[in-house]
Length: 251
Image (cartoon, rainbow, N blue to C red):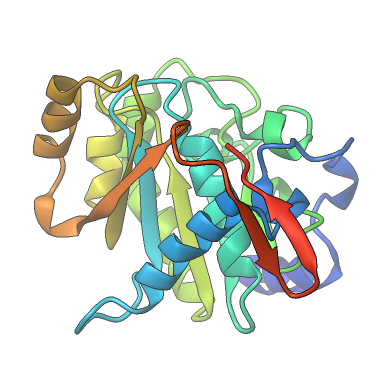
């Protein structure tokens, strides 16, 4: 059977559904607390992406940060859930932090084969995809074990071909690519050439201005869509009403 026909069939029937082993992490606000203050901020990002002046929504997005521990994977994951909750959008969340995969801690699946093994030729796309409990959201993990040559794998022609094939196969699918931090590795600079838009995450009271500026300067400015300020903890405490429910602000 043709690989892409098999992929399409599995998308419908369920992809590694048994791989999800527990309750999804509480930081997935769009899943656990869809009407919380934090979830509303994620929706604002989605709305911005879909209503940029004089631009069609970018279908291949990269989410990165200047430094480790700024929350880029949490932002990428929540944004993916937010888009998948739309009427017509499907999302493939691609983890390209081959050095330190962490998405499995959010979605509760064991370390699994993914991008690294596909690029190494030891696995194919269909067997690596993981179906999540969120309708229309699928994950392509980074790697079961971190490869010895992550930059070389990402810089290979196979990587650009993989992104193009994933994007071209489904015209209604968004690709959200989570990369390693810019200041830590060269990997995001490599991925940046393959995407249509870039979101840079900065952590409140953590990211230094000098590191943030250096990160921005290393990326193609015409592709940077904006910055997400994460972990803000000094907004006034408020209650938010949505329909008949009351929701408190979450951080």
